[in-house]
Amino acid sequence: NIHTLQWDTELLKLLNVPISMLPEVKSSSEVYGHTTQLFAHHEIPIAGIAGDQQSALFGQMCTAPGMVKNTYGTGCFMLMHTGEKAVQSKNNLLTTIALQINGRTYYALEGSVFIGGAVVQWLRDGLHLIRKSSDVEDLAGQVEDTDGVYMVPAFAGLGAPYWNQHARGTIVGITRGTSAAHIARAALESIAFQSYDLLKAMEADAGIPIAELRVDGGATHNNLLMQFQSDMVHTKVIRPTMVETTALGAAYLAGLAVGFWKDVEELRSKWKVDQVFTPLMDDAQRMQKIKGWERAINATNLW
Image (cartoon, rainbow, N blue to C red; front, side, top):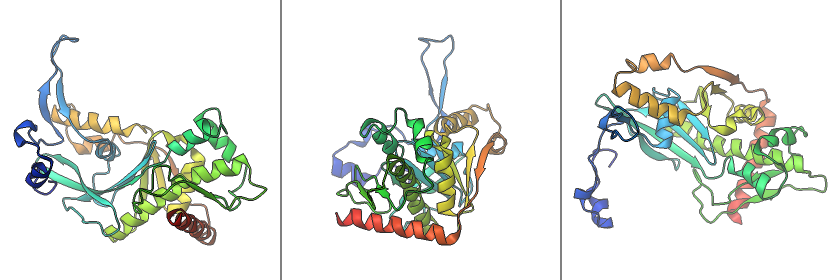
């Protein structure tokens, strides 16, 4: 139970799980125990615990209400820090604990895109349009735009904010002139469009425009995708020098617990910017593309 910070008795009863078999609920940053001395001369403290996305949120130093990060992996996962208040979403997002540290509990809003970078893997392994994933940027860059082609990669249904498990992937707007480059670009743009949907839902729940989007994960190395993401969300997209922020966040939590770092302020000074992408597309063109995406989503949902 994310409000009482205890195992939920109602769920335990429903699932017939005895509370005695569950571990004690602990904070995100404290010493839970030590490793045995099998492979090292010293016992090593285990001192940081966080789920993938909560860890990435902390690794991105999104520690104040309204700060947002998006992880571009096989799927995409966007979290907004909401402070010590558990915000109930009115736009089909999830409310989760961001972390508990120094006796204080912080919450977040979370949205999930099921197919992010996996759409590039499909271009590689399913359609054989590229030999390796990194080739997609060059292929997509061969055309100025998708020429009206939209891909909705609902291979496993649609995640937030649609939550349609029955949806399946669609490609719309194909003409005789559609090429592999158009398909590749539409695939990349689909990642940004799905993330745009999450960001707009978060803005609506928070009641404030988001000033910047911090990004991490393997797909953030794709500059074409990051620029298009900035154009669609119409705000700064910031890629840090360290994009493996999930591992980084867990290390930060552990380091704080054992005193390797003094406090969160010290950690903030370690977060460095690699590149900032700013919107370049004019509003009319941006809205035209978003309306096309909305039509494509409608077509997918109707299918």
